[in-house]
Length: 214
Image 1 (cartoon, rainbow, N blue to C red):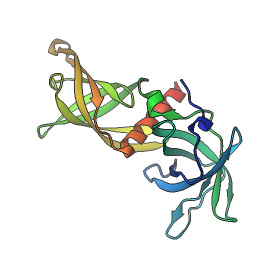
Image 2: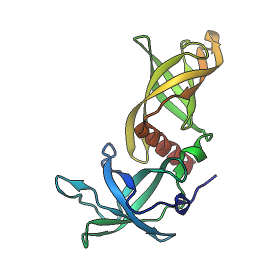
Image 3: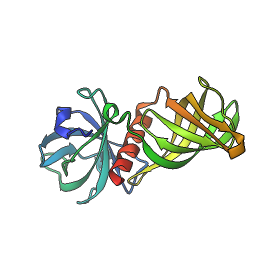
């Protein structure tokens, strides 16, 4: 299921987070100026040290926001098509064919091979995320991690279209899929708990990017 950008019914002035691909660890603030369906989006240019951020034509970036219409975080990719300083610094962006939202992508899982660290009672155990959604994942570990209802924090690194972030995911074991040490694999289904808006946005960007690459 795909949601169109215009379906968000965004109003001018809504806050945005811009992440340029050559500075993926930096979140830069912007505001929506407006958009024309299938033509383009106009946003304010982020400010750095009291001045406008230098931006080149064709730069790739990820945009994140919260939509009250969709009642979820939203993520999409675009590139700059025009840069202007009058009457105020603005960026013109390509119009996205679709956007990823929390509600739409909640049940969609993508296959992954993400090396992660599980923090339990002061110890650190290794695990691999073998599939991932914005609300949970399936992991495999060489050692038992617990039973259904147990909670822990998982740390992993995701890379979405040049965006590299280390994120911490509070998790609850929902189901023990396999706990056979004879095969050296213990598998669990996890649900994420109380994710921050920042982590949720990163997950949406990662899942959306993996879906587009599939």
